[in-house]
Image 1: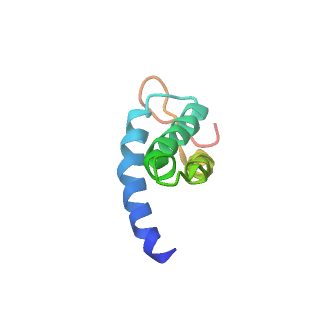
Image 2 (image 1 turned 90 degrees about the vertical axis):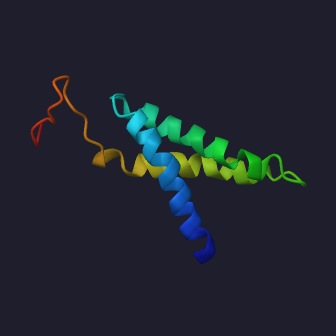
Length: 91
C-alpha cells in the first residue's frame, strides 16, 4: 500500500484537479460525483478489463472509490453566486 500511495496521489491529483476546474461552473454537486466516478472507471479500464487475464474487479472497485472520494469533499466545495461572489457564511 505504501508503494501505491504516492502514484495514486500523483495520478489522482493530476487528473482530478483539471476535472474539478472544468466542472467549476456546474453548481449541482451530483454531477461532480458522477464525473469523478466515470473518470475513475476510465483510468482503471486499461488495468482491469484489458489485462491478461481480465480483472474487471479493479475497475469496478475504482468507480465507487472515486465517487466516494469526491462525495467526501462535498461540504468543502464553494458554490458561487451568479455575480462571482461567494455567499455569506451561514446562508
